[in-house]
Length: 186
Image (cartoon, rainbow, N blue to C red; front, top):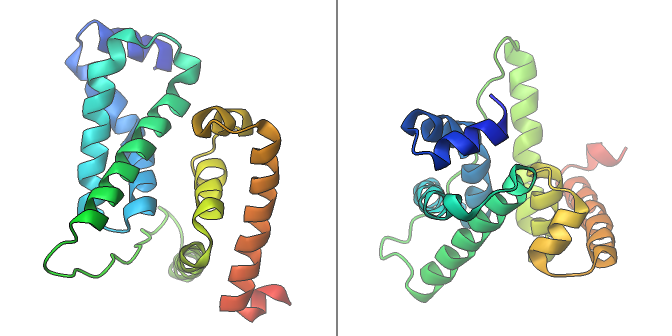
């Protein structure tokens, strides 16, 4: 179903349409929250909070072309708020960060699945070593698939700054990957 029709049905109170919308975007919202929080339970809570905020604000939102950047902005803000709360009041248990798990691609053989998992794990380890600004740029542009103009609007910075940061972020990511696994630089 087209996003515009789905949003219209959601605004009309169609519960099945709302469920379809959540299912369609829950992976993106969870992944974004997980990148900020590095904890599955916290990311699930933030994803739920994000969809609650979207539901409450959906009536006033009309431009389906702007839905993805709007949703990502809400998820990002919820994630940042949760990170701040956790820094102010760290959990008593001192839980370790979750390890990113990569599920096998349907139809992929065991060797391909293992290699994809290793590459993904390497990228996430490299992301952990990056500066916060560059990590966020990779997350928004490369992982969430936002356009540079959308990122500029979301972060309230000039488009030229987004372009420069995006380039620096890719360079830093490549450098971190090569430092972690020199075979990639060969």
